[in-house]
Amino acid sequence: MNIESKWLEDFLTLSHTKSFSQAAKLRHITQPAFSRRIKALEDALGAALIDRENLPITLTPSGKIFHITARNLVNQMNTSVSMLEELSVQQNYSVKVAAAHSLASFLTLQLANFQTQDERDIVLNLEAIDVDKATEALEQGECDLLIAFDNERLKLPPFSHQKIGNAKLLPVSACDEQGKALYNLESAAPIPHLAYSLDSYMGRQLEPIISGAKLKKVFVSSMTELLKVHAVAGNGIAWLPDYVISNELKNNTLVVVGSEHHCVPITYYAYRYHAALHPGGESVWNKLTELNIS
Image 1 (cartoon, rainbow, N blue to C red):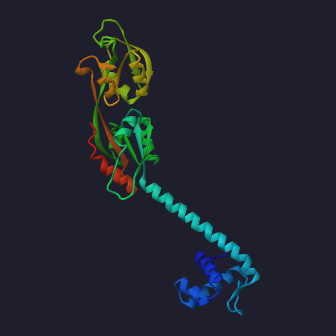
Image 2 (cartoon, helix red, strand yellow; image 1 turned 45 degrees about the vertical axis):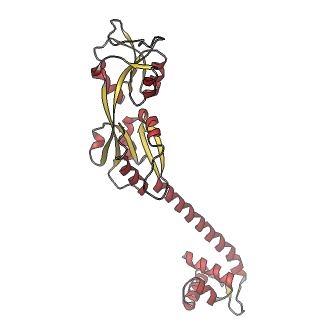
Image 3 (cartoon, helix red, strand yellow; image 1 turned 135 degrees about the vertical axis):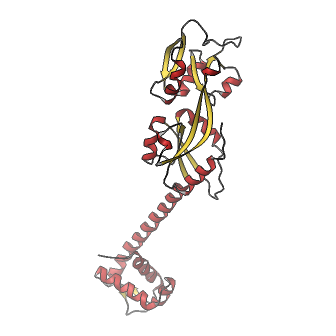
């Protein structure tokens, strides 16, 4: 059975107007063409739907039964189309941004009032992600954009990238009541070290700095926020990104210890798959160049 959706709408219009000429006018076609479509519907169903001997026209018993089916089918199609249109708009203007864990909280504030020139509002869906899973996330389409640290693989095709900020990993310690650091890198005794996991991005960046230092690991994690909690509690020295501890440095909850060569510069980028994004994604990508986060 091959029934076109327009035939169903023709039939419902005819059932409402009870006139071939009025129904054809409402359907924006000629009356002969309209009559042929009604006849095609009846042929497809193998049943007469319209009693043409009476004026105004009436439905046959078969027509009355099929009227319920036709109305339900058209309503279901209209509802589904509306849902798909709404979903399409949401997809076009809801932008999935994945960010390295330590960058996620910082970026939430930076991008909270993100605006574009588009007439529609863009909703940023920001999610923290393990930076080492970044490539997979982009390849699998789990995010539109990724904001993470320097990654040589993501700088090669089929990816595109743009630099959006600089930061530093600073060695910090909690202070005593006099505002003096509890721990110092110049100490002769082993220093409790709140360390990044060696297989994490931060851990790899710090390896040249901490090798040979008199550090004793007392806590290990790949999560910057967990290391920060322990550092504030006075449990040891941690290397933390400056954007994570700006408030703690201002109120002397934490203090930088060591010298400049103990600080590790890091750069973070926005990455994307090279293929064109939906309108919302393209708009956010272009707008990121104006943020100048550093």
